[in-house]
Amino acid sequence: MRSILKALAFVLLPLVCIGLGFAQASSGEPTPSVLTPELAAHLPAPVPCDAKKGSCWKPTIGMEWQWQLSCDTAQTCTNLEVQVPFYVIDAVGNPASTVAAIHKRGEHAYCYVDIGSWEDTRSDASEFPSSVLGNRYVGWPHERWLDIRQLGILAPIMIARMKVCVQKGFDGVEFDNVEDFDNATGFPIKPEESAYYTAWMANQAHEMGLSASWENAPTNVAVLAPYMEALLFESCYSHKFCEKSAPMVEAGKWAGGVEYRATLKDMSFCPTYAQDRMVGAFRERALKSYRVPCGTAK
Image (cartoon, rainbow, N blue to C red):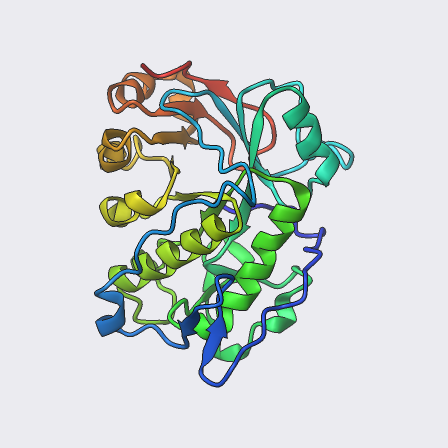
């Protein structure tokens, strides 16, 4: 799921320069220009979150949360009347003052960043060359899939987006659209290439002092668990894959999810979420502030 706050734009920091065949990572280490199956077979070593640069805060198993990516009104892109310890909110539609207000109450916030699709309404849309733009994202006419194998092109753009999160004081980042290998992207992306790309992005977040989390891609949970602090599933009960969260939960890491199907407003999915130690809620696809939580999973 991605934000529909399309009219609002990223205020990008200067992009990290691209060298001859390499992009420069935030650590200064050269980044491969193109991911190959041979390279992707060997994931980068996990980088611990740098607590000298950020809070590196992470939610605990069972912690209640709010996921709001769309504004209730033009003035309310995060409804702070929903008081929970953990927010996942849009990095574009929320100023630093919103993050500060969350922190003032002793709560925490992760920023939403789409690292797998191109959106024609983002202010950095022109930074993406046509060579990385794939098929239209079904159901989202303003988006196209990205060729995440072209890491040298995408790395500086995504690093700049994460720097916006750092500037606004977010505690972590939530990556979206990393299930590219399961979709008709127009590119022959393999699960291991997607895993490498996502793990690499998590390492960059950690070097900035941001914790890292991601949505969906249940195939890659086991390999991504060492790189992440949290996992979010959409419709895992409806599509019967909630148990795929196990590697995260077994590692003592937070997992949550949402269900959208109208017939599930009876909350019949909650026992499954509780069994898998996931924090669940019924939501509408617009992802405004409306939520019906299952309650804290034990």
